[in-house]
Length: 262
Image (tube, rainbow, N blue to C red; front, side, top):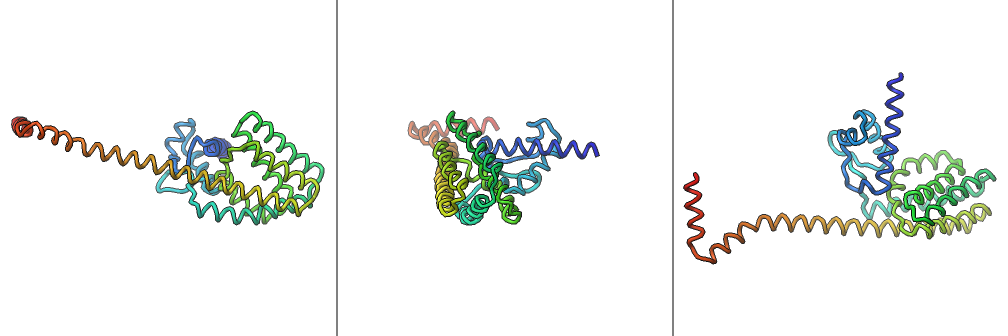
């Protein structure tokens, strides 16, 4: 039992480390996660790594590949739009229910997350600002106390965190949350709905822009790699052409030397 508990605790730590490395951008879309390499990197056995990869697969942050590795999830434009449609319905509902059900303790928890987000945004701490921003949404889901909606959002949470992690205007995002908080605290669900919808759609636009930038960057890398491979293949041809331009003797001499060498 002790060993099983140890493995469970270790896998939880590995999950946290891998998730953080993905959300911070250290591991990017398409990067491989190979059990053996991660176990060596984190100085653990392969079992907790395997459990951690399974957890992140279930969260939607990874995509399975054959044998013992996975890749950080890659999104398409259709993925972004599909997720946004679902989010636009479910999260708006969550915020409205939370506004109707909140208590003074609930308001305090949301406000604390908002203050942490502003503090992190003010000093340009991107990771901390994104973490606090995500907590702002998570506390709202907790306050809504709707098990079915939260179960659905729980299945999507990894995708949401990964897809909407790239907001680059931290102050603007915190200000968006502050406007939402104002309507939430006042139980003004009509204004709240409009503000949450605008906030979510801004996140979708950012995700689509970042996806386009990533795809353009990937295409440029592939083009440079293809050009480099083509250049390597053409180099001998250019060399022979230059030698031939000097006269017929150089190619003949190389041929004789080759025969002599054999």
